[in-house]
Amino acid sequence: MVVDLVAAVLSFGVVYLMAGARVVKQYERGLVFRLGRLRPDVRAPGFTMIVPALDRLRKVNMQVVTMPIPAQEGITRDNVTVRVDAVVYFKVVHPADAIINVEDYRFAVLQVAQTSLRSIIGKSELDDLLSNREKLNEGLALMIDSPALGWGVQIDRVEIKDVSLPETMKRSMARQAEAARDRRARVINADAELQASKKLAQAAAVMGNTPGALQLRLLQTVTAVAAEKNSTLVFPFPVELLRFLERASQNADGATAPGTPGRAAGQVEEPPGGRTAGGRAPGDRRR
Image 1 (spheres, rainbow, N blue to C red):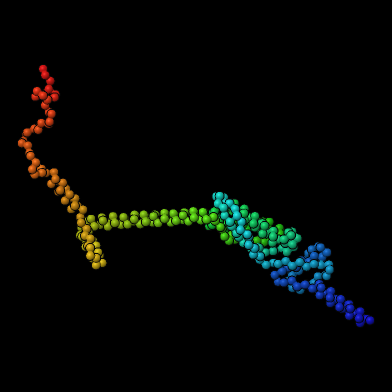
Image 2 (tube, rainbow, N blue to C red):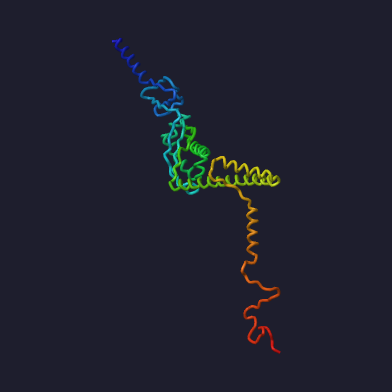
């Protein structure tokens, strides 16, 4: 009878111990609620014991959580409709606050992140969303981290993943980029022409002072053209010679053409109708 009683007590003790045995993993922390009240001590990783039927162990994950923020559509400060999605990285630093102060800290962080992302879209311009993302990421992380501190959550970083633009805006930006590249190309070409003209002016000044240099340059050009085995040879003709021939032809045309009747010296040709009837000039007055 006594042996049976001892065996029963031992069996009950073993079952009791097994019912109160818990294991907390390395990346977790344990919170014990005794009759609904939180115990002050946080259970460290490893083996731990609780009182069965009185205590309840709540495990809190301390790892970094990667949470994608759904794409949010908004209007930027320069009146452009965009869709922006992001990702937030956070972790629990105070397990008691994460369980006591908020019902579901993951859902709360997600809602704050969505609201903050829409606010960032409204405060920013399109160029900032496309080129200045680091500054926007810092501002977004600060906006999410402010309310999350009271929930025992720390925001590690927030990154904007993608910015979706309307097709019309994409075409407009493409045309703007093409125009900017065309403008830069024209400026570069104009600058090259200016530099080349300065060098040509310097070369012309040197050749003008040395006529033999101009003749040598002409022969070099002819040699370079002939080296290509072309059937046509372009030979430069002096413009001054053309002007001389033009002046000579004009002087020849100004001379008297053959076969034109000439007038004797001193002979005056009266214009037709120079005198009226009666042999008087139109300006004569009868006394």
